[in-house]
Length: 69
Image 1 (cartoon, rainbow, N blue to C red):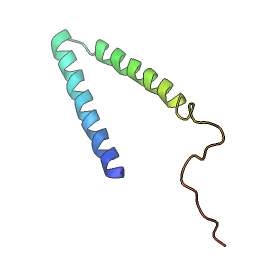
Image 2: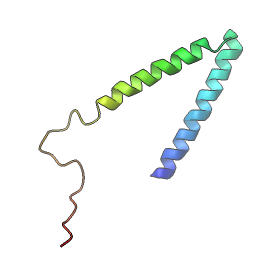
Image 3: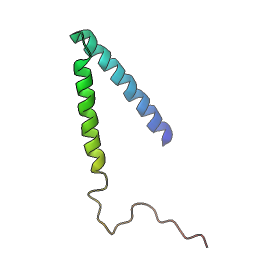
Image 4: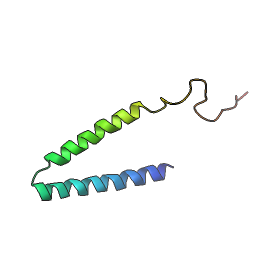
């Protein structure tokens, strides 16, 4: 699981760097790339705040862990 997370993070970082370079080449400035990046950060922060909102309050959040007696 952690390998997939690290790999997808690296691919996303590479795509973001490439896209920012493309925006710089086309427009001559990084302004739009910074604005898009900031907007995506705000959108992602809002999505993170919604994690677990739809879960009923009585349901367990994961597998039961037996007591170690």
